[in-house]
Length: 235
Image 1 (cartoon, rainbow, N blue to C red):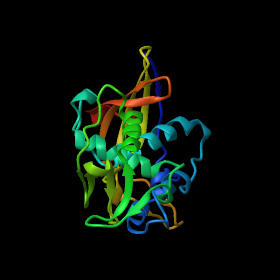
Image 2: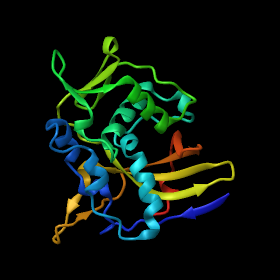
Image 3: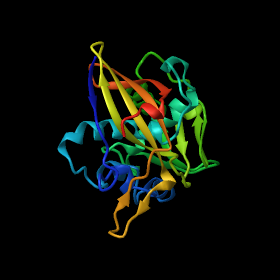
């Protein structure tokens, strides 16, 4: 195994999620004004070119880590509700998407309508094809992503949503088998502070996870999320 360990600069590193605190809430509250796409394009840019790979992994993991899913040794044993919610949120955080890409529907449940087939694609991009989505309504913090079987779609309500954590990739280990093992710090959303220079200061992670990615022809997918020993983490 070849190992690449990356250290994190706690002040001034400018993780995109830090700059975007609160934008997730605005996304669900004001359709057409802002969206989670701002997480991908509106944040403070990384100060170091050699952190580009870490930034790429953090962007990929954002919709997963923000939900704080239950740990799993294999994606086929993961909680389906966690996988579905992460897939839906990933659609709203992709650079090419905006609220204008999705129809706004009104009725007993009003909100953004996301087709089932669109969620299927996002699901496979995040979690591979070893497990298939089992569509159903899922609870997501303060709201419910309602699945409407007759219309084969999810309806995303216009309500506030706070992410639980933001990802902070601390170590990257690559194996000959094509797996990538990441040690990821879970930085609590509510712990960010603004210093006297009006810059966000990144707090210490609240906990750590080992997230394993498996490579595919088109990229990689999350195959496992496991607890990591904080005492052995390179900070």
